[in-house]
Image (cartoon, rainbow, N blue to C red):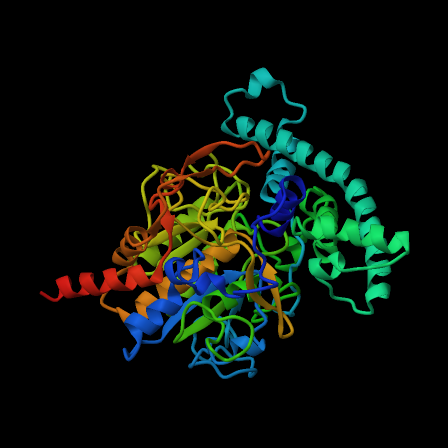
Length: 532
């Protein structure tokens, strides 16, 4: 799963994600309007007040396929899907859908005993572990025509490079963490509080050189978007990479107890939709549908939705079998929108996912997928799951891939970490410094295409609520055509921070940022034409 780690790397190496932080104003800037609020949001507040007021929506089920969600969060109350045909806690499959007590969704990376997968490998590690015994000692000339040999050489090189990189960075970041924690303890003692801002650090007056140097050190990093919490996350992620993600001796699939290369049955797992690490999924769920105007946190984009929670993503790469069965569960249980804020570079059992995408297409479902956080061109590199079959043909007519954009128009409109692609990324959406939910009734700021995708899924859900006459293909078309265009040159995201520019219109199919207000106006016209 490509997530927070890659964003922190870009911050540490290349500076701020944006010029304005959520700590001051516009905590839910993504709901705002470029013209009236001067931020490049999706104009959802404007759509509700100007176009949707007084109209009656239908309730829409939105599936959140992710790493788990804290469904008890105060800002998600009333918006979590409940299976109406299932009696909670009786240990019986009341609705005969194959899943016992699936009250709010399902967890495909656990077992019937209630045990859950937390850490896992990256897909390249699994491939290396599988292929190395076959090719490590083989004569290159004898295996040159083996279709797996080219893949082996590629994943072997990447695997060793990534592991070496993580091991090399760990002591450096560990030392930086020690310095930051030491400075933090000095500042916290001086200020008499644990939380502080850049202004607090700037206003420190003291004759103690240690206090002044500590404040200056912390301020320098805060101006780049990195504080104690961020460095802790970075160090934790490096530790996870070394011990789990790139560890060929670690394989937690015995917890699930199946052969993940064979998809003979979708009936496995348990009903623990939170799992051991629900932070990512909780934030994603809030982006889509956190209760609006309740005075808590920030407003989700969509109202009148029910969030179906499906867990398939560990702290590592998701497996194709679980992704396929997660989508299948969502479709079979009534979801009309599916958000997928995850992705990986290899998909060895892609056929499993392709088969269920055809089912989703037949059921008129819109699937929204994060473009990835590697500053790469998705027209060149793989980011799975993808919406093309083995013959490079489009599978699902309602598929939307989303890159991440920042708050202000200008050269830095595309997030510096975001993937892009004129053919394979459909649209951009707010994904930098978004305010949202974290478990245990908490709130925090986060960035990523993982956040841009649910913002878009929320817009899609609103269209499905208020314009049920529209099919999935029409909704995708509206999302793309109604995007707020920006026709000037921008900085192309680059993993090495090298500056190059290109018109924003060349970074995606739409050439713009998702805009609900424009989408609603266009949807009204399309529906009117359909009724003629």
